[in-house]
Structure formats: structure tokens, C-alpha cells
Length: 408
Image: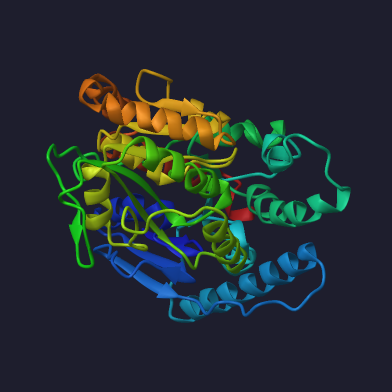
């Protein structure tokens, strides 16, 4: 078969599924994206990039979002037309509809089977009011989210299969759409992301091999949605309580202009000892794994949104986890059993909890083991990818056998 993946960033949530499908005899797999991770290659997958959309000059955020979505969709459509002219006609298209990359794919390849990764549907619930602590927001504030939902609605209205990663994500969709969405997590490579007792963090420019206590934080960027401001504000009290503690942050400081500016203000507001708080930027998977393995306590926070891979990977490495007491996290982390939950907004509580866990880290082996066991039981790649592959190919087989398929 010929299989096409569409995502804003390569490989996104499709890394292992694309590898699995590419490894099957006779398959041809193509992946179109705007951005990519330079340190990731997938054997058998032909990766092509699409030019990004320059910043849109429009006064309203919703207008900028809509224009960007349509322009991005057009650029991807042009790339799809080039593939078509080369003779590539996919049997299966698996798309992530956010950012508009799949907006016109059905117009170019109407005869294909279309699968959709349904990552997030914006509502006026917990996600929308989280940063206002539940206070009402002006009606116009939701306009941008409505535009973002257009991508989802466009994709889901005509798709042949819809998949999401967690029950919490599925619950955000309207009931009529929710009923059609399957929950299959993309899985964690538990062989790669595994514990290694005694691991020390040592990379070029940052040697923490002598640190007796290491608190870690990682992510794409210094994002408010992932609780970085709360984490950073907890550091003065934590460092004072644990004089031998070092803090290691692996994230890009350039993840979004507004976030970078807010971090500069945060640095001025919250002075920390640069000899004990270390930034290493976004790094390859091997160095990221080294951070997780060397961690004494790992902090993962998120607002009500889709969980990032970092939660699952840290638990797979047997990290002693402090995480936010928010709805999506509670689906995976049970307080005191496989991790610890902390109020998202309470930096003081975070500092106290982290310091207490550092003091008791030698007794936390059962919690670390339970964290890894949770991943092995419910999110192991060796289980999830066969499930995902079987779901996709069975749905394709049923779709192909429908008498009316040719007329649709």
C-alpha cells in the first residue's frame, strides 16, 4: 500500500506507526511536514518538507489564525499536487488536522482512506477558563479557538477513522464526534526509555555528574501551559531548603516570542543562583534520556490540555514524579502510588513537596517502580503500535469492501 502522513512537525505522534507501516513488505510511506527534528530518521519513510507560512498581518487573532490556516493548507495542497503529478496516489492518508496542513487533502486525494489524529477540541470548559481561574472571559476570546476547531471539524466530518491518545482528549469533543473516536495511545519505547541506576548527567557544556540531588524539568519550550512559571518561582525556596540540590532545565528559550519575553521578566522577578540552575536547551533523545535517568525528582506540569510525551517517557524511566493535579494528569498518575500531585498554581507547595521528596528519595523506590509499571501495563510501544496498526488496517479493509465506496 501507499501511505501518506501529514503533520506540522516530523515525526510528531506518528514516528513509531510510520516506522511500523514502512517495515511491512510492499508499503511505500511518505511523510509531509513543515518542520522536522534533525536527529530523527525513519527507515523506509520518505520525508518531504513544505515551506512555512510567513507571519500574517491582521489585527484580530482569529483572523490571523484563519488566514494562516488557509495559507498553510494551500502550501500543503501544492505539495500534494506535486506528489500526485509524480504518480503517488495514497491508499491511506493519516493526518493531524491542526494548523491546516490537511485542509484540502480530500480535494486532492478523494479516493483515499482518511484517518485523523484527533488531538484536541477547544471548548469553553476547563481548558478555556483555566488561566482565569474559572472567571468569565469576553465572548470574542473564543473566536480563535473556534477557528482552530474548523480544522478538526473539516477533518472529522468526512474521515473514515478517528483516533486520539487519552480518554480526557476524547471527552473534549462534542458527543456526536466523540462516539466515533477510538482511544489508542501512540506508545512509549520502554526499552529506550528505561531506568539506569547511577546514571549521571554529563554533556558538552554541562557536567552535573557530581550533583547529589538533581531536580529536572523538560519540554519544547518555557511554556505557561506546561507550568514553567510556577516551576521557576518554586526554585528559590527549593534551593534554600536543599543546599546540595541542582536544577536542570532542558527546553528551548526561544519557543514563542511572547514566552521568551515573559521569561526575561520572570528572571528579573525570581533571582536564582546560576551556579545551581542550569539550562541546556533542546537536545537529542539520548541526552534527554540521560536527564530523566539522572533525575532525583522530575517535575511535569500541564494545564488541562493534551498530555505531552514527556509525562510518559519520564515515568517509563522510573522518575520520581511531581506533577500538576489537573484532569489529564489524573488519568495516568495516582497520588502517592506512582507519582505525586501538586496544585498547578501553588509554587510554594511545589517547593515543599519537591524538597520533601529529595529528603526521602532513598525510600521512593516503590513509587518509581510503580511509575514504570503503569507505562509497561497501559502505554508500552510493543503493545500500542500493534493495536494501532491493527485498528488502522482493519478499518481500511472494511472501508475497501464497502459496495458504495467507489461512488463516494
